[in-house]
Image 1 (cartoon, rainbow, N blue to C red):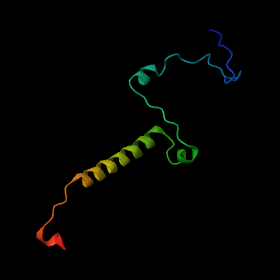
Image 2 (tube, rainbow, N blue to C red; image 1 turned 45 degrees about the horizontal axis):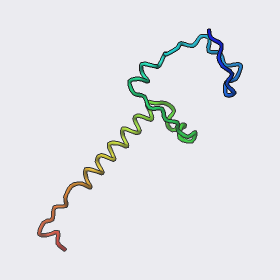
Image 3 (tube, one colour; image 1 turned 90 degrees about the vertical axis):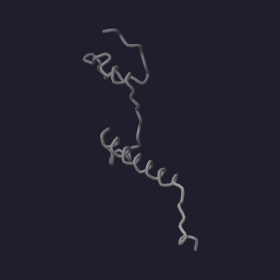
Image 4 (cartoon, one colour; image 1 turned 60 degrees about the vertical axis):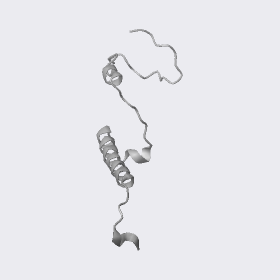
Length: 81
C-alpha cells in the first residue's frame, strides 16, 4: 500500500489497509447528493430512508399548495357579497 502524505486531519490510528478503493464510485457518479444535517435533526431522521420519505412528503405538500394557488378563482353570482 502506498504511504499516505502527512495530513494534519488524519489521525495515526486510522487504518485504511482493508479499505476498498472506489467502493462507492459508481453510485457517486450516478448522482449522489451528500447533505450534512444538524445533530438535533438526526434524532428524528436517523438514516437516508427517513430523510427521503420526509422530503418526498414535503414535496407533495408543496406541489399541492402550488396547484391550489395557481387555480383561478371562479366567482358565482352568489359570491359577490
